[in-house]
Amino acid sequence: MRQIDPRMAKLEQRTQGVMALMVLILAVLLIQLWLLTIALEEFMAAHTALALPTFGASAFCFLLNLWMLRYLVTLDKKEDKP
Amino acid sequence: MSDETPPKWREDFPIQWGADNYVTRREFTKFLVLISGATFLGNGYFVLQSYRQHAEKFESKPIARTDELAAGQVKLFRYPDADSPALLIRLASGEHVAYLQRCTHLSCPVHFAAATNRLECPCHNGAFDATTGNVLEGPPPRPLPRILLRTEGGQIFAEGVQGA
Image 1: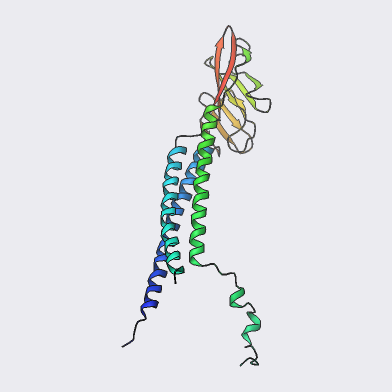
Image 2: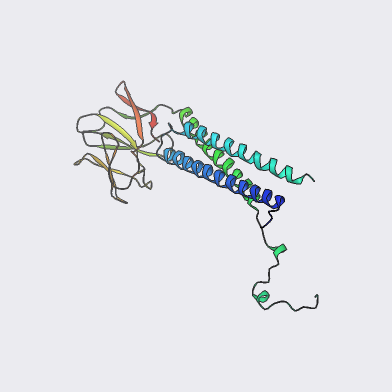
């Protein structure tokens, strides 16, 4: 029976965590790009009603991304420890 | 081992692993968050621009006398600045309307066709309703910016621009 190295298993788990985080951040970023195109189209059409709501939604997405990035930084710090 | 000759494929792929421009998943993720911040700031720019548009003040400027134009006639003037050509039109109904002369498609000057009561753009055959400024046909994406008018003492004044 093959022995699983616990260190390798942990490393693999972390890699999967980073991958999942990256995909989530990318998905939120795509939503933000969509919001930006809405704001741009509204601006070009001389409408201003959606400028503030899209800004608010984009701020929420950015804060969400920052919050997810915090997890990554925490993970880096853990790995730096001997 | 050190005197071993490099394999043949190394000639086609001379880049060493260490010299490769290697971006880790973590670095890429951090870069994504940076882009996220830039996108957020981009949205902020549009909020600032919309506030600037609301805060813009237009001066009142006399542009014509009320009896100067007959029905179906047009007068060219410049408003709100010397670089903005505009049209004052007296419609068949006797009502005065004014629009910026630049087509909202690619800024070609529009002209008034009294027979059809339309403002037409000769560049790409765009057409606007002379009464409302709304797009009737062609590629213009939005209505013509309308100049707000006020009549006082037999004089027509331009008071502001709507939808610029």
